[in-house]
Length: 203
Image (cartoon, rainbow, N blue to C red; front, side):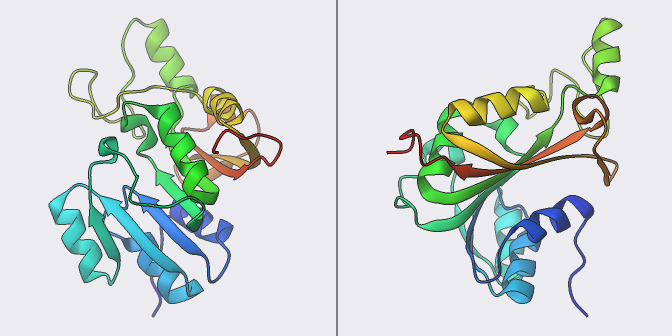
C-alpha cells in the first residue's frame, strides 16, 4: 500500500515531474520526499534542523542534511536541482528575499507554501485589535516561530521581483482548493515558480 499524503503535499507532488532531482528546505519527517522517491522515482535531498525530524527522514529512506537554513545554502551548486521546495517555512527565515533567490539559483523551479495572512479571519482579528490565531497560524504573537507575515499578493510580488515567473498559484482552506477570491478565502497559499530567462537575478 502506497503512502497517503495530506492535500497540500499531494498537490505539490503533482507539480513535480517523475525522475526529478528535488531539494526540500525544511523537509520535516521526510514523508513527501519518501513519496516522491517511491512513487515518482525522484532523486531527493532534504535539509532539516530538528534532530528528531532528521532521524525520521533517515528512517523514511531520505537523504537529509542537518543544517540551519539561516547559515546559507552554499553547499549546493547552481542549477543542481530540478525543483526546490520550501513548504510552510519561508515565513520562518530572517532573510526572505535572499532565500527566494537561493531557491532560484539552485533549482530550475521552486515551490513555496505559506500561511496566507490575507485570509478574512486574520483581517477580522486585526480589525478587532488582536493578532490572529488560527489553524494556519496557531501560535500567539509572542511565541510564534514565524518571523514574517505576508499575504498571497505580497509573495507573488516578491517572487516576481526576485526573478521568477509564476507558473501556478493555488490557495487552500482546510485542505480544499479555493479559486474564488483566494487571497481573502484561502488560509494556505501555494506558488509554483520558474526562473525567468529574461532576468539575471540568480546569476
